[in-house]
Length: 206
Image 1: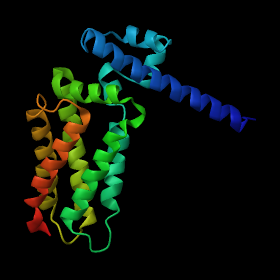
Image 2: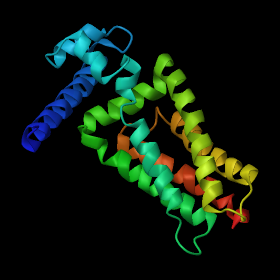
Image 3: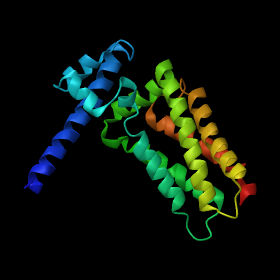
Image 4: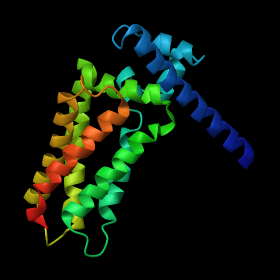
C-alpha cells in the first residue's frame, strides 16, 4: 500500500530536481555560453547524474523551452473560454494579456533567469531554430482553437490569418527592438504594443 504522503514527498523532490536543472542550465549558459555548456555540467549543477538529466529533459534545448507545452495549453484554454458576445479582437487581446502576465511572473524563475532565457531564445541559432518549429506548431493549434471558438462566424482561413498576424507582429517587433529594450519589462512592453497594432488591423473580423 502506497502512503499518500510519500507520494507527495517524491513528487516535490522531482519538482525540486527539475527546477535545479533549469536554474543550473541557465546559470551555465550565462557564464559559458549555450553551445559550450555540456549536459554533464548541467547535471552536476543540480547534483544529479547525466542519466537522471534525461529523466527530465531530452536535450539542452528542451530545458530552455521547459514550459512551452503548459503555456500553449493555457492559451488554448483561454480561446476555448470565449465569453458570450466577445468579439474576435477582444478575445485575442485577452489572450495576449494572459500570455504577457505569465511571462512577467517568471514561472518560478528569478527575473535574471527569465530575462536571460528570453535573450537566449532570440539570439542563439540552435534555439531560434527550435523556437520556429514550436512557433509553427503553436500557431496551428491556436488557429484551430480560435476557429472552434467562433464556429460559423470565422473561417479557418480568417482564424489562421488572425493568429499569424498577431504572433508575427509580436515576434518581429521584439527581435527588431532587442538591442534597445534592455530589460524583460521593456521587451514585454514592446510585445504588448505590437499586439495592439496588429489587433487594430484585425477589427474587420469583428
